[in-house]
Image 1 (spheres, rainbow over the protein chains, first blue to last red):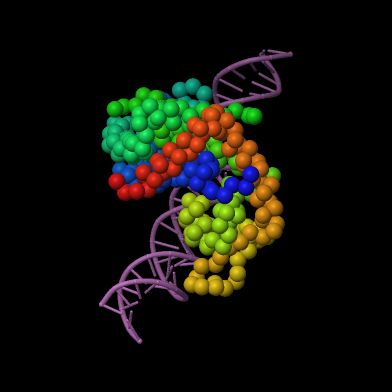
Image 2 (cartoon, each protein chain N blue to C red):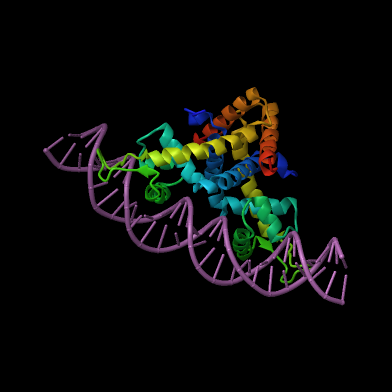
Length: 145
Length: 145
DNA sequence: TGCATCATGTCAGCATTCTGACATAAGCTT
DNA sequence: AAGCTTATGTCAGAATGCTGACATGATGCA
């Protein structure tokens, strides 16, 4: 097909939008002492307390190993806590500390503002359809052809 | 606002779609001996031959330093070539070799199929609007508020 | 009951990418 | 002409994330 304009490629624009979001979030989160993956992890824990390391990894789209070091950082900073021994199996259920919930709430305000800047380019109905389409595209790729 | 469902967050779905695309592309490109950033670099060079290291870095959304090591790999593999001395200033214009163009063409077929799997969840008019919206969102974030 | 399979947490090693810094070259201002 | 600003390529070091591997605990099956 020999595409002449990269700007019409969905893969390129997807990467571009994601890169812009990541850079903007990193900038906004730095004053809170968080990176974007750390923020994503805390947000997961807010919505689903008690998630294990492996479950968090899948939710943040990194490997278990990466999530492990990320969690240690959050634990050392006192933002999350894990029991020393597993209540069942090997999974250690992780929870936000009070300090973690506080930091997350402050950071979330900034992140929400960024997401609003993104969706402001469309009307609300378009924005909702857009998110639905994003999810459908991810599903289409995750399902083997 | 306290969002209860991560699936409705545009940031989450954007990350999810990008992660799925990246993983699928990595898998499809491995048989060609390419990573996704390397493929993106070759594609840039196909559309705009003679791009410098710094220009390529911006196009692929990595730093100059990362693009530098990436380019050395492609150069060593014989897929791209750069003059030993800069014709003007310090910028070294990079071009695809014949082998590079050949590898890229073969890889591009697979990548195009992947992009088609993504857009197949919408009708063509929706897909075009979707790409336009992605670009608008990236612009909204790149422009200081 | 045994045993195979799977998921989890974790260690080690490596690849990738980043931040910080420096020297060089071009363009612009004065 | 001289100096300031910007852009580029590159080096060094560190952070981040990944692959491979292993032991442990749960689960399902013969």
